[in-house]
Image 1 (cartoon, rainbow, N blue to C red):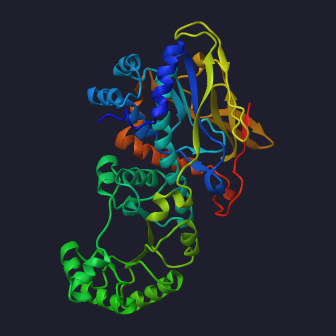
Image 2: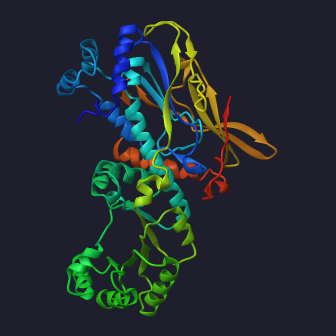
Image 3: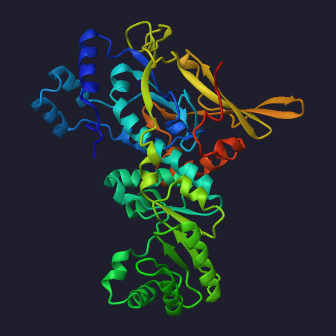
Amino acid sequence: MTTALLTDRYELTMIEAALRSGRAHRDCVFEVFGRRLPGGRRFGVVAGTGRLLEAIAEFRFGRAELDWLSDERVVDDATLDYLAGYRFTGSIDGYREGELYFPNSPLLTVTGVFAEAIVLETLVLSILNHDSAVATAAARMVAAAGERPIAEMGSRRTGEESAVAAARAAFIAGFSATSNLEAGRRWGIPTMGTAAHSFTLLHDSEEEAFRAQVESLGVGTTLLVDTYDVARAIETAVRVAGPALGAVRLDSGDLPALVREVRAQLDALGATGTRITVTNDLDEHTIAALRGAPVDSFGVGTAVVTGSGSPSAGFVYKLVAHRDAGTSGSAGEWMPVAKRSVDKVSKGGAKRASRLIVDGVAVAEHVLVDDDRDGLPEGAPDEAALGVVDGAVAMMRPLTVPLVRDGEADPRWLGVEGTHAARGHRASAVAELPLEAFRLGRGEPVLPTVFV
């Protein structure tokens, strides 16, 4: 399936005008960055990169798309001829998926001729803004939960494809499972789920419903116990499944008090190994409020798939450099360009970034403005030692990595393997953060961004 029309009209009308002006094939550098972190958070999590690289590979204008553009008179015939042969042949560098970001971090750098690069703007932003917003919110929930697992279960609170993307982003951010089967199939995420209140209401009694579920799924299943009376349901659940009952789920009520009551009742009935999971409109704040309660796991829906109040990461896609000569392959010099409008000032020039780590703790984001695009390294060591100062070991960890070369994506970032690699990288990156990064109140980014 092509992704070519998952874009805004002005991307194509700009190509038409640039073809007329003779600048469509000018070498350019576009950059994705955010001016601030969403919701006053202390750090962000990059997600969506693997999905984006796959979407760019599918960005082709077939006969059906070209006919529709012609019928609607979106662009002229010369532009249609150009689009018929469109294929991104440039390069993309950026932060690997699962990496942490801060204001003005150069998350993605797209190098190519103007027409090839500008048409990707909407696709790039729609994927990265959504997925990074979800991952950033999810990472806060994971931090609030500590060692207790969290499942994503928000499919019914967003669009059908957004649900799949959100499940993937939450998994990268540290969620342990999803209720969404397509996310499980497509991205190799563990799936979970047993029954809703309607299953209990279907049967003539709660006991009948519990017996049916246990007979089908075994005594290790999770029984939903708050359809009627929780205390009575707990007694029935243990009587039906025995003390080896896997778990009970609470989806309503005053959770801190209720969880303690349920734990005491389960223990009194001999079900000391039965776990308690809660799923009642949770977010990072309610999860944090349950830190001292005997909750074994959480299920989060609406809050995670909507970015917990910040549904977009707020990234922008800006032209930051072009060659001073007008054609591709010229020997012209790279010239930085930047927007200067009020409250939307950007910094020109191609960039790459590293993170300063002192004694294993992240201290700052260092961004090097490098106008020599031909000189960017194809790869870099995982760490570069700066030495020992006052007994502290300082390292610079490179953040900018090659993602696409000559239009071909690096397979390390794609598919199931790329998704799981991003999850692992997120865990290691979060482990570098200072403790103040995990405060839930609004505040300043935990790391400064320093241009060098």
